[in-house]
Image (cartoon, rainbow, N blue to C red):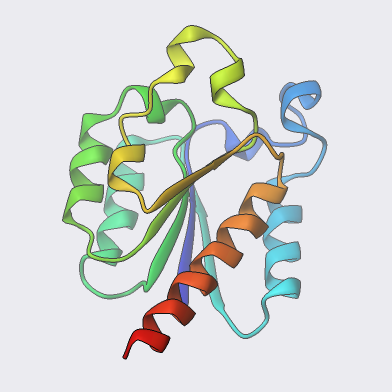
Length: 148
């Protein structure tokens, strides 16, 4: 499978920004771990602080470039109708992930504009959310193949 792992604003600071909340692993650490654990998958990582760049990258899923997406929209989770609209155009599974438990944090983080358009949401397990999401996507693929 071609899997896009898309990361939104401030995730480039992972490992430096609020390690008591987000942990000490960097996004590069996460990428290396996923590629080591899932060598048979083609995994493309992308991070941007720009909403437009995230939209442009997600649109690769519309054109068939990707088979699935693991998406950490960061703060855009709570504010971006434009990302929500892009997700609505996708016909591939998207798993939304958050390192911290967004429901145990500030009130404004409790609402996700993007989650209703995702196959599922994994939140609160630190960088392990990416591995959980990858396993979920592989499970969905296997389930689909078994239904044929």
